[in-house]
Image 1 (cartoon, each protein chain N blue to C red):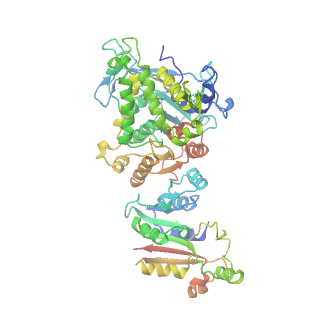
Image 2: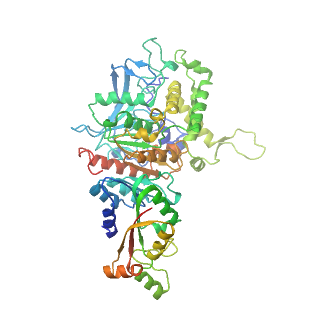
Image 3: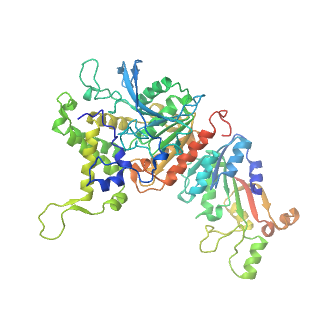
Length: 422
Length: 196
């Protein structure tokens, strides 16, 4: 199994949530098209690019990566002033393939509904950069890469990462692309954490931060779910203390279980009730039936878990869930978010979803309150949705309107004097 | 532009912090941003109004005023504004207290139910007035607390609220003399500038 060549990010399962229900009983290689997505609104065929970076990257943990690789995609054209760049920050299981299609592949990127010509992140107006971050497993340097010191895969020895490490690595790519200042840095969940970190670490380098379904730090319950996921992976005998690649193994069952747990928490009770209810896929609940019985939701969840473990690396999952746990926006600002955001210079758009219980609207309101107290320009919209945390990947009219309306104003003001009108 | 906005603009100093409760489509905040360079935030719940604020570049926060304003610290704004919304609040007197806690000053505008045309409507038809300004039937109106200019004056005395300025606006018979003689009868929209 070649993980690196797996082109479909696991998070796509969210986008294809509904179509997959029908596909579970058909060949999984069938094309999965979003029904409301005529191809003329797609960016079309895209090709990932790779950047080998010789410049040493000093990580927050103190370890220096002498060189690293970044795989990324770009959509749209960079204008002559180089002022229309938007950086997309992916979440836990995301990758660089946010929009468009690969040649010969009918499945779109993970944010296809929001990135493309005329879409909320409009590639006719913006030059959109989507990067697979280090520590992940889709081509950028991570636990599956070779550790130059040992000649073996890094595995569980890959250095611990913080969101700021992703920001620093993204900044190297930014410089490579010749961009001085992002028009916006946009991300959901862990992506929103990166957008906020950008605003504090490099306040001069972005004009807008769009923080979607995110949080300034994880709650105990959130950390608990992540630990359950990690324990599931480590309990798999094939985990081999994180050195499974050296033994030509992979903790597929553990990773699938980790994903199944995560997946349930990313949905809402209401949505699962609507889509699956108590429908049976196999068997019957009549009396004296001894034949096997399987609920639709079991089948769905097992499928999602297995699909994920085929495409994602277990060490990356452990590394990035820890990164989420460690994130604390204001730790070095005396744990005062207002003092932290005082360093920011950009404008903010904060979005949350009503049924999201892992990154609840309350967390986004805390971000918004801190920004207001710090005197920053911020708008906050709480979008009604029954789709839980995954709502940030799924079509929603109000979400499109808020994100599109905000970015359309950003586009109209590209090149306008700073501070004008605000 | 609404006439009450003209008074509001005169009472708000440049470069100050303004919170607009029930900011609608952001017209007032936008004009204050452009003319007074204020740092403004509007609270709103109507999705369409929120979209319009975002498109205008007005800071808008989706928040239901009836759920409280405890997320705002004491004295965190120079001015807290509420235009034409006090009558829709569940507890107007508590909202007023909150506004004066959060802002050094506050500005309130409201439709005066003691206006002569409203009184005449009730007198002649014997039914709850439906006017251009109060365009709802009694059963589906968001305006759940009707009160008059005189009622509001009394409330300010009872709750020790200091009235810095007051202005009366009327479409019909907008004579200054009538309004100053019988404000409760000739004020259609009352505009108050308050402090503790």
